[in-house]
Length: 185
Picture 1: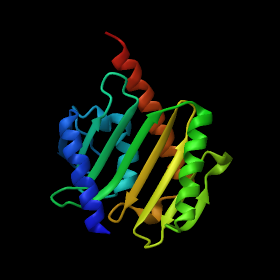
Picture 2: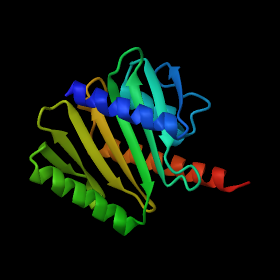
Picture 3: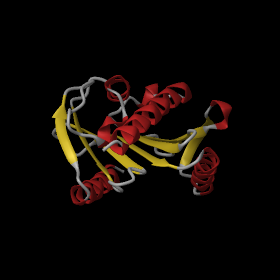
Picture 4: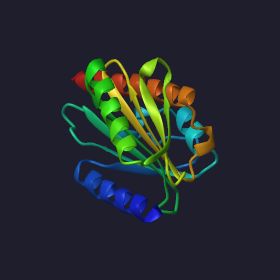
């Protein structure tokens, strides 16, 4: 599983280099000043997810003009171990709910989830992977879908529906702020 996560992280990193990646090494609970892509999550939320880990943050926005698809990868500093991947893209609320439901059904059909937990109000779900080393989550917001993949090394035992909703709300607000910031000339 770590090989797959490393390969996915390496592919993401290579793609991000091509799309304007910015990165920095930071202490837990601290964000780099220049990484606009990873500004989609607050220091407080990131510290809750990563705990006391020293982290390396890398991110890139794939559509730099529209900023409608933004990702942030958080790795353990000095290792290839990915802690969390955050992805958000702009869609309306109905499409976001449909995308989250489609992903949930796909994971259930492939038996990749040992346990699936719905979020309150039907806004999304948590999928604890069969090997218990990863939790995936999708959360439908009003104007975007927020997806998380939490890997070993992050605080997996602390990933709850309530916390995921709070982190998704944080991402939604911060992504909206970035949208407005980049819209002004």
